[in-house]
Image 1 (tube, helix red, strand yellow):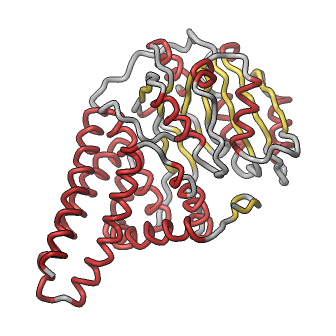
Image 2 (tube, helix red, strand yellow):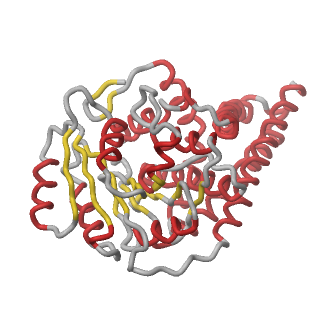
Length: 373
């Protein structure tokens, strides 16, 4: 038993050091001052949005683009419909009739049926060298395009931006918010050390010429991952990858309202993990999974092995402490500290969730927006 405890201690120590590294990086990143903005664009930007069955949410996204503090003549909006079966197309056509924006709306042909195909199509149709992507269910801050413009004046090839779920009360919403806070902490914490490992297509921009030079999007048959795999290509080719953490650059999106929808979303996200090639990303994914499995054994040990319960409780609280420090810092930046009221129940559930999602992602098929994967 003593050897098992030593293994438990070593794994927890590696996990704590890893999260500490991310935490230090995030603190360093948030210390960077915002740059001055001007609503007169120095660059022209192509905004690409793939859409599929978004009738309940796309209007908010379109309105936020309409309200950008950016010259209308300095950006274009390209919408690509991926075989929607609801009223998404009607909503978009109505918006086009009533807007002064430069909007192009296309529909994929029957041979192309994925978000990646929609993105490729949109990029091919774009007129400008800066590509900005977001999702149809997102609310964009009014200075979103200004920030993108300012960063590409500094010779960036790719810009990573912050994304957060809109705040709603309740355990399910808070679980998703805390999970996203951890992801954002890891994204910008690692980027602070010039080791980018994560990004999010809901707030991502890059140069079209660089996109072309690295070979475009990946060819993996996964419903997600277009953003991370493109990031890996930029890294392999030693391109300049930067990020910006600013309160008025946060893109907000909606969390899932049901447990079923949440699990389907996470299975979709997890489906890409088997194709990871970045060693740091693989390390972090592995240590989170291993630590989650370890936590299940710690739960059992505390319950049934009285002799070593104190040691196991210490390991449990050490893990919780480093997680809380990171989440508190990230939640403070994103103004989501209320979600921390659910920290303990989320911590208790999280290892079970991680292990179940991992197991499900490698053993079962799932459905997303009417398609099976």
